[in-house]
Amino acid sequence: MDTSNEPLTVLLGADSLLSQRSGIGRLTVEIARQLDISPAVDGFALLAGGRSHSREWLQGRLSQTCQPLAPLAGCGISFRQMLHRGKLELGEFSPLRHARNRLRARSLRREVGSAMVYHEPNMIPYPYDGPTVVTVNDLAWRASPEMHPPERIRWIERNLPRAMRDAASFVAVSDFTAREMNRELGIDPARIRVVREAASALFQPCTPLQAAPVLRQYGLADQSYIFSVSTLEPRKNFDGLLAAYRSLPVGLRERTPLVIAGGAGWGRVLLNVQSSIASGELRLLGYVPDEQLVALMARSAAFAFVSFYEGFGLPVVEAMASGAAVLASATTATGETAGNGALRVDPRDHDAIRDGLRLLIEDPQARERWQQAGLARAAEFSWERSFTDLLAVWCEARGQPAHG
Image 1 (spheres, helix red, strand yellow):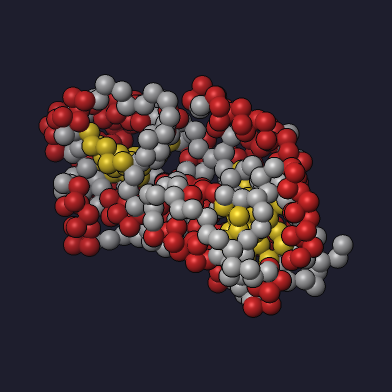
Image 2 (cartoon, rainbow, N blue to C red):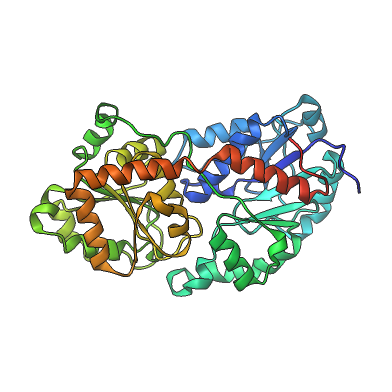
């Protein structure tokens, strides 16, 4: 069917916004923001919990970072009415999670027109009888299955064949991930488009005065702590980071604590750390909202992200954009993302991690060089540029040339 004259409308998967936002949640938020302002998009809605929601629902999610909200009730406005209004405002349709809902999915597609593209940022899409685009963020469960919950791996592998069958196109967040998709999943490179992530505009340098309230809240001194952030799970290598940190001189550890932000994930991580916590050398902050995260990144003596495996490594870009001196893994996609903007080390080499930390803590000139290099590297990533690439993927998926 020729859809070249139909307006482009997008249904964006947003299940990642139903709980505390991690990397996929950040990706979803930034795509939604671009959808809201793009003149090339006639309308959009967010698909979460099997129901569609409006930009107002998104604002509600952004203002409540810890507790999930129940899906909003529908207001009786059809998708076609919303399309005539311009941007989609609010709609509801039956959940598409199971195959038995395909009949409703077909009805929805007839109602809104075949131009509506469903983009799932979290790899496993809902069943949808329209053009579907799937983002693959990483294949970590294939690379290191021992570092992931068995039930999660079973769920992915059970649903992956349908995702690969339903997708018109795939988006990879890095060249590394694109290669892994071809190698591990056998996806033809011609079906893969690389669209890199970027830091939100919120992530930018801040002065000691601007950061003071946040640092005071957590009992930290300006540029006198090592900072890291991620969900606490084995592949993030927090135990390796802590081991390297513990090999620093005692005096240096006493005046430069290791501070980790991130919610609890799964697996055996940071066990038997009571003595380090009691001494003040290790501080676990739990989940930290983005507004505070910026200050903690920007005013750290060093930001460390030495994960074993990443599909992109968004915290590295966010920290560089915040003006932090970054120590990052040289392996998987993290090394690709960091480029020349971070001091890169082997994540399995505790001595290299220790030496990198010590350099950034004790040498102000080296820290300044890496801060400037990081800012320059972060500037190479742009959500505006990434969204232009996504537009091309969506238009291609529905069978028309890309246009602005």
